Image (cartoon, rainbow, N blue to C red):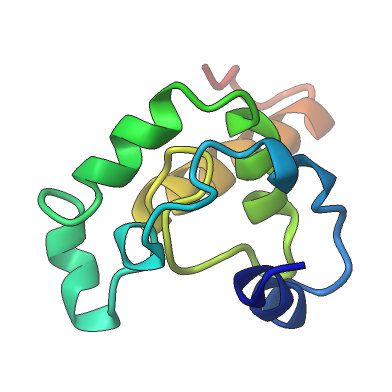
Amino acid sequence: MTGRDTALRRLLGNLDMGWRKDAACDGYPTHWFFLERAEEAKGEVYGYHRAREICAGCPVKEPCLEYALAAPNGVSHGMWGGTSPRERRQIRKHRIAVAKAEQDPYRKSIG
C-alpha cells in the first residue's frame, strides 16, 4: 500500500479500495488531483485539466466516483471519478432529490 493509499484510508475509513490498483491516476503527481484549498475555486477551470484528461479514460472511473460519494459526508476535496468537489455536491443533491421523489408518489418527477 502506498503512502497516498494509507492517507486515503485514514481519511475515508475502510471503504473498499480494491479498484485503486487499476486506476489510471496511479503514478501521476498527487497535486494534479488534490489542489490546495485556495486553489480549489480556480481548479474548476485551471488546476484539474490534467486530472480530467487522465480520469476520462480510466477503467475504474465509476467505482472511484461512487467511493467518493459513499464516504462519510462525501469527499470534499480532490478529483474523484473525473468530478470536482462542486460536481460531486451537485450529484449528491440530485440523488437526494430523486430518492425523496421516489418515496413521495405525489411529488413531481425529477429528471
